[in-house]
Amino acid sequence: MQTSPGDLRIKNVLGRLEMIIDNENARIGTDTLFDIKTSNAHKSRCLYELTLLSRDLKPEDMNGSFVSQTSVLKDKLAENAEKVQAHMEAIRRVVDLLKTATQEAEADGIYSQEQFRYSEQ
Image (cartoon, rainbow, N blue to C red; front, side, top):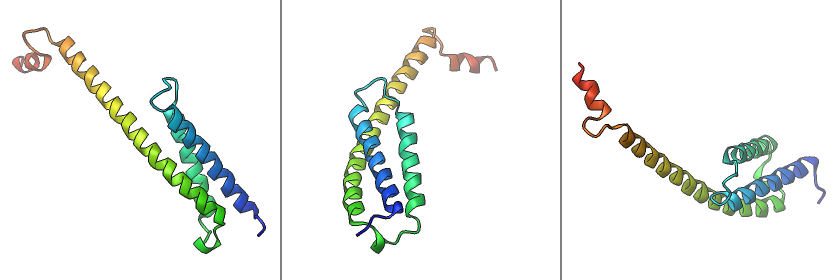
């Protein structure tokens, strides 16, 4: 079976997406310099390209190698979703800690800023 130019483009985008996900899975939570926003933009771009390339593709016309490649990607995306969710939860916790520390630092020990605001009215 001959590979069409469309098949080659899909294969390239799937390969790029897999590389981006592998990189993100390896670095998220371990590399403090990792830019998750940029990585997410790259993933989104790949998914957008895949949507454009496959919108007219019927399931029965799909190259068999795409099926196995997308199955591998599905597993990697599941792992990625867990890591991103854990990362976001860690960020929420840090923000909550900082928020609490800021509120405690702003309090003068007798009245909170909120209590003072209400007594003026």
